[in-house]
Image (cartoon, rainbow, N blue to C red; front, side):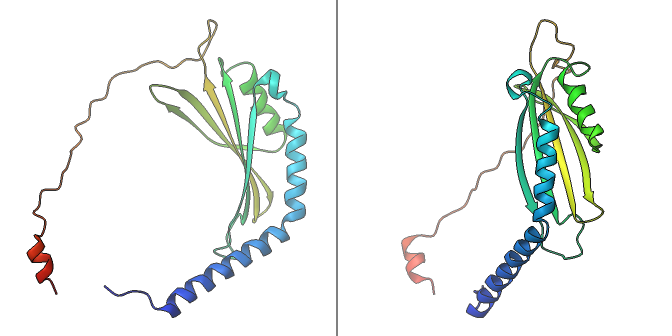
Length: 182
C-alpha cells in the first residue's frame, strides 16, 4: 500500500479550491437570474395559503462546476409537501395547474408506498434559459385517511424474500503471531 504524497494531497486541495472558485463564479453570474426566479416562485406560491391548504415549500440551490459546458449549471430545487385525500380534486390539480400555467412541464410521476405511508410524487421542470439554469419542482402529495377519500393506500399482496445473511468465521492472530510479524 502506498500513501499519497504531500504533493498529491496539496494538488487535490488545489483542485477543490478551483472547483469552489468556479462554483462561486457561476453563482455570481446567475445571481440576478436566481433572484428573479425566487421572486417569480414566491408570486406563484402565494396563490396558496400555507395554513389553509397545508402546502409546505422547501428550497435549495445546486451549482455544478465540474464542466463549464455542462447543461444546467444552476438548478433551483423546490420541494412542495401536502397531505391530501384526493388526487382528482382540491389541492393536487390546483397546484399542478398553477405550475403548468407558470411554464412548468411535467417530467414524471411516481408513487412511493410503504407500510407506513403512501405518496404520489409529481416532478415538474422549467428551464429559465436554454442551457444553464432551470427550476425543478417535486410535489409530494401524501395520502391521508379520510371518510370521503378518493385516494387511499391499499395492500395488493405480500412479498417474501430470501435474503442471505453472512458472518465472519476466521481465526484471529495470537499474541505470539502478532509479536513475530514483520
